[in-house]
Length: 364
Image: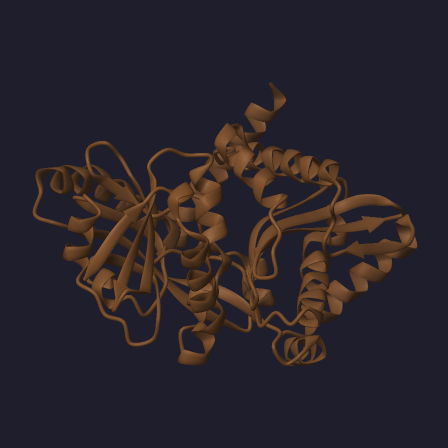
């Protein structure tokens, strides 16, 4: 393999165009997951402006780009997927039929190990190092919103009827309901981040927006727009007041759901569910094929999904002491977390404890 490694600012316009073209055609070759916006050059470049060590390996065949591998690298050679911890889709973007040797790629990138937690399917050289596979629910709207709702009614009639009734009641009780699919007001984004931070604290979870780089990344992506990529802020208003919002990323065919939140004062109306249905309707009108709800078992995802994709977590390693040490340190933590998440008898008590801690923290 002819492999060159670049800093984000060194990537040529021609290489960026080739990367985008591979994504836009991926669904034609049975690799729809490669069209995810988290795998786009725009996302990698944005992370590169917020975090150190972001690099892009370009693999060429006969002088032409055949694959793009974005990663983050530490001084000791520990590699991670770009945006690990906030990225919901990871892997190597490549043209049809391309194959690669994972260890050879790591060697060319000066990596002892590469860690991932949302690896897309079809990446066999990396999947050999996977320690687990997890569902990532999606909402298919490629046949139009009416078709999606008709199938939703057939599959979950009570859920559909109740959610649509709550939207009507929201309008009756508070005032006219209005939906903006692509809200450009930065104040609305700040409100969403405040809601989300409060939700993290309330439920005892780590507040992602307490990390300055994540706030900077989201703000930057909010202002990033092209024909093939955009940060999309969607807001549901009732009587002119925002009651729910979502920020995600859009590619040509995929809307990746990322940060949803709502005003707890309107919780009885399930504004988050209403928002997702409105998002699906607008996405279908924009030519989006599906909304990716992201890895994680949650009741609202089970209610809205039409099917599931699969993502993997794990490590690809070379024979190197840094790789051994990194895996030894990280593997027990991941194993414990996944054991708790996958077993209701462990998850439910742990969730109650986290929420109780969140309530105490919120009172301070």
